[in-house]
Amino acid sequence: MLVVNLTPHVVTVVDERSRVIRRWPGSTRPARVEAVRVPVGLEVAGVPLVAEERTRADLPEPQEGVWFIVSSVVVSAHPERRDLLVPSDLVRDGSGVVTACRSFVVSGALGRLGLRPRDAEAVP
Image 1: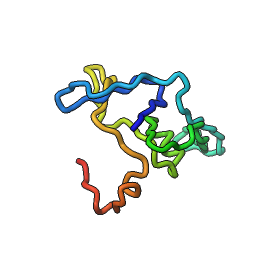
Image 2 (image 1 turned 180 degrees about the vertical axis):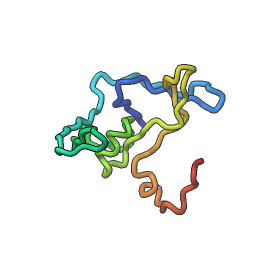
Image 3 (image 1 turned 90 degrees about the vertical axis):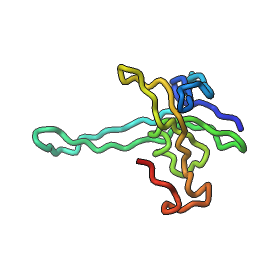
Image 4 (image 1 turned 60 degrees about the horizontal axis):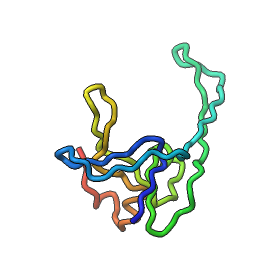
């Protein structure tokens, strides 16, 4: 299986002992979703409200045997895709900066694996 990183960040996956399993360089052409915000003419507690609509990312076409690492925002803009991975179980340094992850969330995983939500194990 080929994994392509479509984020601007290096993606490092570590095991439970923080040993590097794999590292992918950041993309020079990351997948991005743009937000268009329009004032709605209302306020809540003096704060203006806006409506927001997000665009779709310019993703490569799905390819057999290829997975794409993207942000959760990109996945939410493409619910039909089953080939997208989002870094999960994030590892942070002492300043709170993400340095690695321990797993990926796979888009559409339950359907892809033939599972129903009640079959999945809850994660605390």
